[in-house]
Image 1 (cartoon, rainbow, N blue to C red):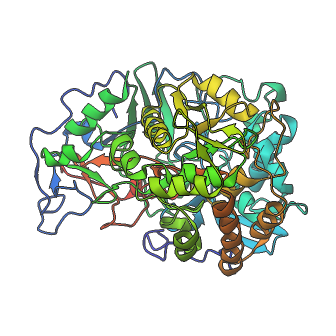
Image 2 (cartoon, rainbow, N blue to C red):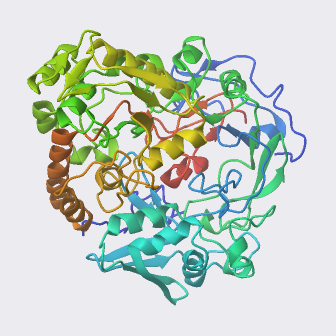
Length: 603
């Protein structure tokens, strides 16, 4: 095991930018009857156990075949339709950027550190902003035993050239070419126009590598619609069974990566039950009938306070590592909202603490006036001093002063009028059923009314909301932008501020939904995209964020976990957490590391 990824530095010689018994298995009866303390080894030794419940507890383990089964939930909510990774409705775990356990990517990304780690490629090298050269691992095979080579890599991305309706088509917006120069070497030519290496690397961390022998035989027009029930990937698991109740994966004993990872995963099979509701899954997590889950649990701390061996990565609030930044979008084509003073007043009128505590069960840290996540992988780019000096925070009196300083006066109905324009009525929208966002909107609307802005909420269906936001017919909206990934914070600045993707009202756009206009920002985005080291990147991001704080085209309302990583140490311990941080709290990317390191409690 001398070549194990766990026995060397996490990046090994990696070069960075800067230089189950398958079938009708029931969950019932799987949970342990009682929990015990966490001292004692897996086989009764005296060494302390790590990666246990937040209350220090573990269970007694499951018996028989179930002891080697991992139960997981939070990814699949209906009967699987297809396991075609190019399909927009692909089932777990073949859905895009979900878990790299059937299909794998060239590189793996770590949300905690921002590192880009080996995957199917054992290393990559950059030639400035010109090329990315990747060297493949030794002996990679697909689950049918056929070799996976650099030619499969090039062919995977080339599918985006024959069908512009699949995700890999976007690769050729940031890359001019991808070529297999031999069986183990892939050379990506970065777009000479954008020179955006970050976006290239992001796609290399998120794109599953597919067997050319299979996908080359599919009619290009049918690539996203082809029904597949037997996915052939390079990952450590294969699909064994899928129906309306569960998806079952079996361990691939011949997995190519067992040398690289120092062995095979610690479980023989993985079962994803398909629950009717999130609450059903939460009950199973609490009881220990689920080992790990990626779904929202209100007040999860009540589980370990109630004696259950449930754990999260962080042991205190916000419990989860932030990775998403839902935004209040403001349509700057609307009178009143075209004024930055009004937009900054709106940002100052939001009770962010109430959103974190009420809508998010305390799972959000204090929101900062920035498009950069202040903690984790992006923290090195956050300028706390400028945010404090030139940003905003919840302060109703300061919000009203911004309005009056701009010349606004209250009408007889208590609503401000500025330059002859009444501030409202404005509708604040987000999709119905998005409960934490719905609750956030109610808090925002209440705050705006309190400072003299006429605002009410409306929660249409998701399709209607999407159409209004992309078409620019909304007033205010709570919506998502790029979460934390290998291309952020650049991608988030692009989502909110890009001028190049701007479209007039009525035309669909996928960035700058508020149609904010500015002559400076595109050059700054280009500067940040082409920066080749952290120092020059931070300098560019400082300028972008300063412009953002001045103009406030949108504002973050919470820091939402990218994934709700929570586990129950009833059957396994040694889960990653802040005290046992050998792997990040992720299900994809670098998160697949924990599958090799969790340990059974029962002998």
